Length: 292
Image (spheres, rainbow, N blue to C red):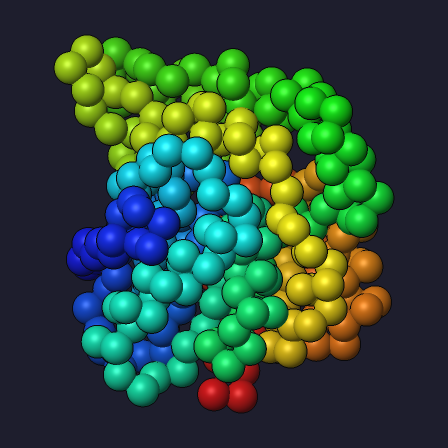
């Protein structure tokens, strides 16, 4: 799989960057990553998908090779900026079918794009999107109002995350089977260590600062359920049997209020696509190419 870099000076005043495959006439798949990751973290999955799709990978603000960009501009603006960058670059692929996929945070951003840009993609697939139920968003909003969001467990864990290792081998050894990386294939962990870390004078460090990851965990998308109800693009949601309980609850609610959405539970956790990339790629291929 050969990927080429792209960059886009965004309207928010910082540069977004990412990768795309050589245009070949295949359907074009727009992919957005999870919080703390980057597009190329998913290379084992994307390599399999590249047999049937051209790829457009966008690293969100402060992730991968994109600029940190100062304060986090929020979930909704991040979705809009991804559309902006895609609009600037997708012309090179010509008039091919456009499809969308995203994981976790990137899955929610993709759902916001589907709602705001109904003609942009013909089909979509979301991988364990963190669809906070309305009651959970209410608690998060109240926490924000009271200044308590910093106390949430995910925020605290993100801020405490180790950021530096003497080399990539040490990082790989330190992350193996720990936390969110538990159950990942060797190839997926290798892709994370290669692409989500950068070389610095005294070793390697995370490209996404723990403080940025925490900012995202401490925030939430605005008007999420209004947007989810508006999605008209046929969309499949795959969610892990061992993922966070609220994900399944949110997915079930979305399916109940929008007949365009279908869902399937799959084996694995929140990052099931990093555990069994072959099974995930097959499911995505079957759905996204259906009726082509």
